[in-house]
Length: 421
Image (tube, rainbow, N blue to C red; front, side, top):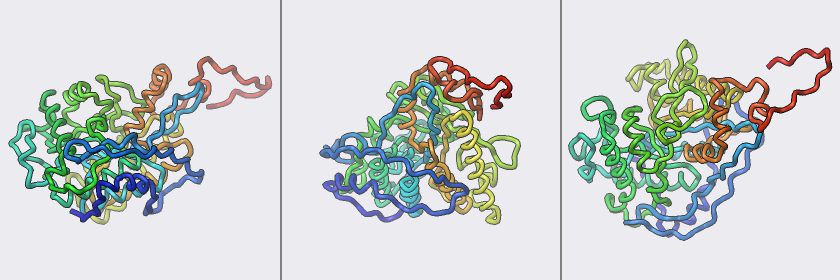
């Protein structure tokens, strides 16, 4: 795991001030907006640090750079939301977590990082994890080491201070039969969630890194949503999540339409987007593009790496355009910090971020920010938006479609032909 620079606990407030510094993005996007940058959200006021438990987490006040959601005005076109999210977020020698934090800052974006709890647990303490239906210390994605935990904690700290969300991808990532998450009961899901929280709240004790800076949030309050491993076990997870006060789930598969509530949670599932060169659509996640290109071989034919990355990039951009020029449904994208097929999917995601996030009327946000915005809307407005199909723009325009009352028709000259939508 990569070495990390540790910030002293007393320097957390200084880290808040430094967290908004911009980084450099690499790569040349296939299209890039020329509009001026959107204004930055106001910084939250400084506040005292109050440690929680062993000091692994802390109360530091309101999260910086979290915009206040506003209700749409009558007739106002909705913004185009895009959510970039990362399953099993952690920092290792590839330093992809820190890299994409810089990419986000450079492009006025915030994201959601779904942390795997075992990435905050060193291998020497693996027996502390007691996964449902498995023996203690078992994990299909392994555990971390002391240096890796420290590196991941630093990235989580800075990401949150920059306005990003820290969700959960749970712990051992068990898929399929034989104790996979799809076979877990509601009670077992609650136990898994409790353990994921516990590892985040006790990483200092478990690593001995007593002098490291705390994570600047109360994880019991920060954690409001998740994506299940392999998108399995959703039914019982959602029942557990509702009981625990979660606000959204992103473990399903939807079309590109406006989301609604399911089981008391916002259903912010991954979506089907165009798959260039194919008649069928593809799930908006790097892993699924890979499986449909090189199967389960994570390092397929090098001669095809560039093409495969371009295919994912172009498919996501096609999905973006049909929403942006159509129903304005939020675009939900899932990724992993992995260098599958030579890192081509990381390159593709970066180029999509650069291409869309600075466009006019586009907001690249976290799931928390999207849920906040949805909560702020008139339910009748959301119900109307959900009547629009994939890529469908209102025939009479947004002003008429979302008006409180019908907008009077324009007076045209008698001989003028009817306008075509």
